[in-house]
Length: 95
Image (cartoon, rainbow, N blue to C red; front, top):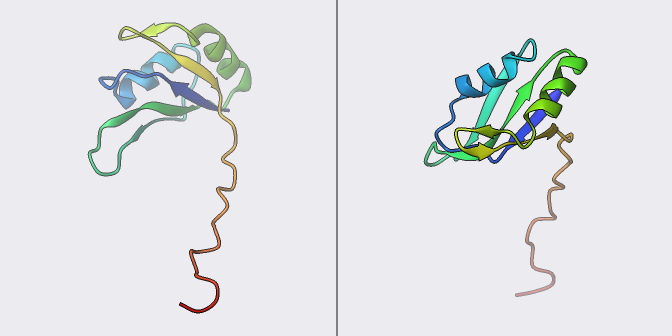
């Protein structure tokens, strides 16, 4: 199950995230989302746990619980929706 983890303090590392969820079972991956220019955390990430019952237990136990002073927002990640491209920015007609 892919789990969304929000409201993370900027000081949290991927290893902190992995260790927090590993208390509930196997963690396949833990990824912090970072700004592509500064490399600073955006304050959220995703954890992948292969066992749905362990993932559900982690979600129930960790949602609203503090990590380094901030209450976590933890829930099942929604599938990425198609962002829908756009039609370009063409100008209709003549210029």
